[in-house]
Length: 523
Image (cartoon, rainbow, N blue to C red; front, side, top):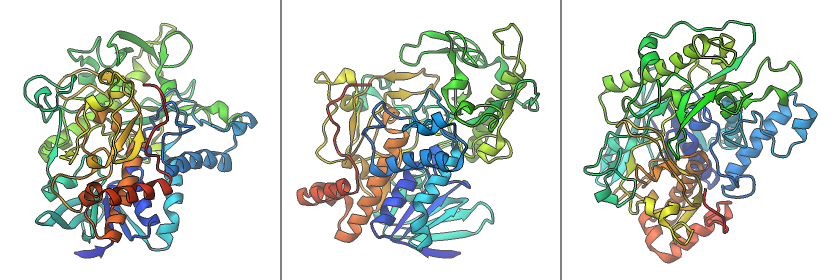
């Protein structure tokens, strides 16, 4: 077994993990970051999910480094791609002109920018990244993690990592059970949290939001790119959930915030909502004629959300079965689109839809990792509730103000259909803060959450799980671990000591982290 040591170890190289590693390295610490897939970046890359952001993202409401990432993506396209003059002149260039974000881009562009941002610290030796490594065990002494052992998914070799601080930036909070840390999963009950949208009766720890295997496709008119019929196609072709208006593989869906029935279409052209437009990451009209044979979209739609089972705290066999079945759902959706989807002209199927395996970097054409909307969540010193951020719960029109704020975020409380066969929960929220107390476990001293595994509930996870918020969480935690090393303090001491808290907040501000919102409205 190899043994590596650093000041700070980050397990998980997703969006929050990259931000945490960048912050820790920038503040002078040695860092080791691990990642299960070939690509760092998580939601932005290996999960193939363009940024979900709030309406003011171009002006304010994110950290300085997240804005540098966004600017870097635009600059990447300007430097390397044959944009039209009109596209090149746009200050807020949106490569895909998709409906979901003001910055819809390819996963590989995000990967290139993240690697460039981390490059100075990698080249200097301050940051080491171990891709294709998965956490397997942890050694703990009382309330302190001493080591985390990871296994190479390529060779099977083990590497023991030791550090002063360990940051869990895995997509499912995988280090928490390995370290014996207290955590929560699934849906809390109303009697536990008092949240208006919590479940009645007992808590449901296995009731979690569905996850999705995203994929990229373009459309080449007149060509046939039909994939092999998926093994589970017959099942998914007939499947209909009790709460869904029609079969899942159809043009039928619902508006998440009202649950009223809607009808989608593939391409723009009628009054129906175009799913191709929704997460389009390349609009061929932004580039010189012929450079892209067709526009490209990422398929993260209602039709390929998988809610028939969880991958957290289940047996290895059940986990692998659910992951495989979720892949089968996404492939079945593509096959249905290519062969049976009703067209406006009365025909069926779009065989010209082409699975872009190169964009996701995989043989099967699906994202390297599923888009996980929900994680294990630490039992924290402070837990953020619906009552703190929901518009309906805040008659003064402002989210709860936290004196220990370490950042800000904004998104609707957006929960997708769950493994408990529960429908969307989509309600208005107010621009919120990230309290330091939600990042500190109730007991563990040197283990911190660095993504959506912070102290939120099943409900508030719905607005704290998106890209700029996860980045802010990771960045704040990276700086927190660094400061605790420098000051020889525990995270809870930083929070409880007024002078230390203010000093830490001043540090965050100096690095470009906004701690409070200007006066704006709900979303």
